[in-house]
View 1 (cartoon, rainbow, N blue to C red):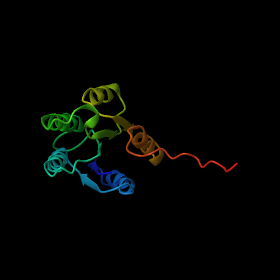
View 2: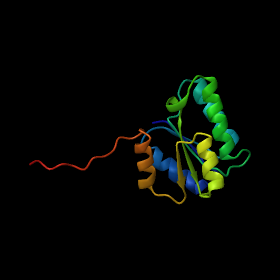
View 3: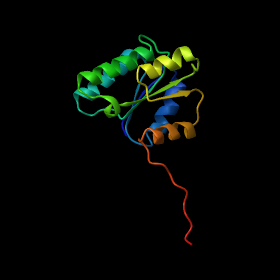
Length: 140
């Protein structure tokens, strides 16, 4: 799974990067502009990201604007709906003024910080990016 972590807080970015590299290559961008550059490059090189973990509060361009631009770029490439990159908003903002616009702009999930690995793993499973781990069944 190819991941782009977009996070301006160094600690949060490192934690997410460390977690996501367990599942494949992971790039980090610390501004909205850098995130879009990385996303455009992935489309041009035909090595799309499977998931983008996107903070809302970012320098240069906020996460809501980045999400809209990601969906616009995908649409230009004929990538629509379920074929698109999964976007998980990862933010401390839990009010409806932020949550509702994120879903209207087609985010796939919304995690409020601080979150733990279990919540992120569950979202990745729900989005079909990770297989659910089934409890071991006894021989019987």
